[in-house]
Length: 345
Picture 1 (spheres, rainbow, N blue to C red):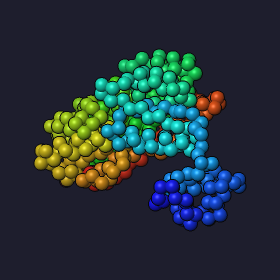
Picture 2: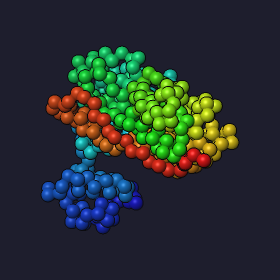
Picture 3: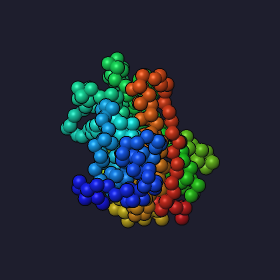
Picture 4: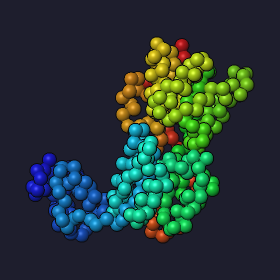
């Protein structure tokens, strides 16, 4: 780590960036002939080692970009924010993080504040666009004011914009089929409020996969509808939903978020049930640190890196005045099997 104000040591920076000292010297002296990606690695090495960047290398911001997210308590949102901010910074833009909290500024108020700061564009993450009861006209008005924006997680056909989403239906189907393959035939779904598009899509995927399982058992598909519980996308919400589902005899629970899954595991433990020996639980997101829970959580991984990068890429094109297809780009999730699911005994 470089002491404050100390000149950077070429050998240290070269080792950190995995380049030659000559390349480091060219970057630090502002010389041409260095690839942009290599230059970025050298600058990142400077930052990691605690050296101040030489004045000549301090870029002026290309502009401000707003990032509006619901909260920071769910670790998947900071994960998205970090990647979005990194990609924006790599293109010279300064991100402004706006978080909605209970009793705090609304999405509309945050947008107004961002516009007052003359932002070049806005990224919306799981915002009002995902709420089927919200008025989509706010986004048409924003477009009318020539503010470029992209929307992550939550499609609305009435909004002319670029959307980036995970395949929530496929995620739920993966989880149900995984549990069914382990011998679970009584599978429940704990998911967020029914007004949100991601929750509705997860329900659709859950019902379609459950119908396959029930058909093989010669039971009516409608049974699955009785095992859907809408609560909150939180630990407490997952615990409340799991309580009902366990009362209904479920041995497998699919959850709409990793936090909900932790709540389901907590409820199982409260009842003296062991996960996965007595009940199997599947989460959604693959949030940071979720692999280190007890037991490590089986979950459906949301492709955060790919989605965040694609969203920023679309926004940069919009901000540059280039035509971008106003449609939904859907990214495929992956099932990550860990220790919270097991064969039914």
